[in-house]
Length: 386
Ligand SMILES: [Zn+2]
Image 1 (cartoon, rainbow, N blue to C red):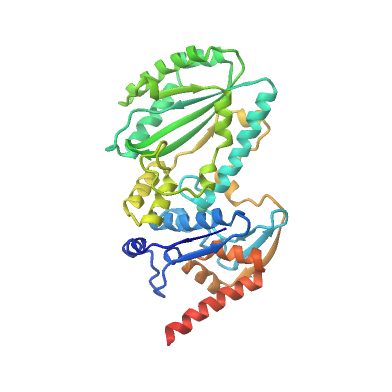
Image 2 (image 1 turned 30 degrees about the vertical axis):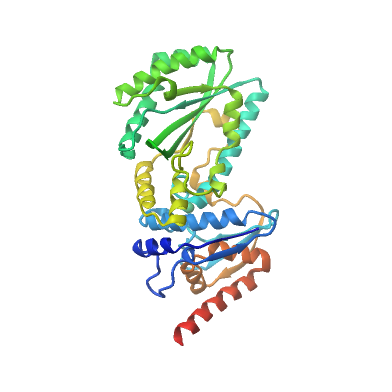
């Protein structure tokens, strides 16, 4: 399996956006024609894509932590380390700063989502085994192309809080025998502009009439929305789905970060995800995609993506770890293969060669990989002097 990317319009756009490195005049590798050969469709391609998309996120948001993630060293006194997991034989970096942003960083989001998905799966399975019941509530509102995401997010967040407080909601909780909830904030973009929505997994115990409960929840949601100046079509504003749909949702959790999607999702069902903006810019060089990513970055600042209700994690014996902890922790046993001298590291960064370097380490070993980078750099240097 192999793939290549090249696009001259994105080169022009990249120039405008300042992607090109000032010092050597050498562009970040993403706008080179890139060809990566992969063995048996293993996971190099997603890794490569994640790093490339992260570099584009850096262009869009140079002041955010995603711009230094897996670039700047943690300790300036030591070099970048390369390790290899024993079980999976995957190479990875250490002594680098990690942003831990599930919203903005394609590298961190993939790792965090994978872990969050396992936690959700564990909780759902344990709950169902004990005879528990599960439903998925989805909340949204009517939105249009002209909406500013930050404004609608603030109103929407307030509406969700309002919806879940008060006597009537408590009565519904009692009727369901609600044990707890996991709430996930999501944002997509489509024909009607920004589409923020919330999925709430409801862990409950009692036999209920789904239609009746959905109807009661709809009344509450309409009230909550109107109190914040938003509104919804009754049919689309709220849905309550059964255990099968809820479980299906958990299974697909985070899969978005692992898939290389074809571009031009605009207008298709479900719309674009924020990482699709980065993909679209990579392919077309359309800088309005970077503006959208910036608007999104501004709107999600300080927001938590996934929230478990109090006590629910403990009930399923899950540790409560932050996204940052998950993004930095090593889960498998691993061995240190070597250190990359700082000078070499800056050249890897300048050529946006981080994913390819790890691939070389896995295929040819650490020394060979380092040798490759140094010869690559020397060749360029010699060329520039002639
Ligand atoms: Zn990150």
